[in-house]
Figure 1: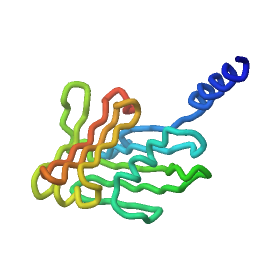
Figure 2: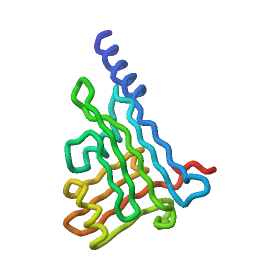
Figure 3: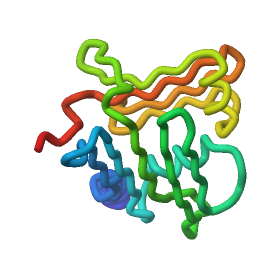
Figure 4: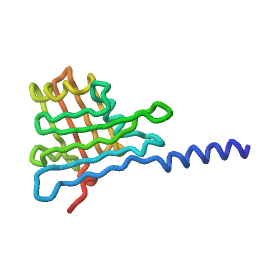
Length: 155
């Protein structure tokens, strides 16, 4: 019984140790919202790894700079062959719409299709307990990126 309790304790301890470093702030003197997501590489969840995995291709570094949306992700595999990494996202604040407490970058039609070409079909990634999401609908020609306002550091 003690071994079972110890095993359960260790499982919860590992989850408490796992983390993804996250920061979001508007760069002073600019109109750019910059978001940084970096996995620790030891314990899941690997949120930057999930974001990297939503992009097409197998190269270690993936980069997008289209329609005002800039994303750069680097990824590696750990000893358990899980993907972890770091990503940097930049968006012009002026391109974000406020919907409730969420700031949303939204594209439709040709502009969305141009950006969606970098993502796997119907990619959806949610990080920071749903506080940030990316949704790429290739078949509908829509692209959405949203972030809860409370996650953005105020300067």
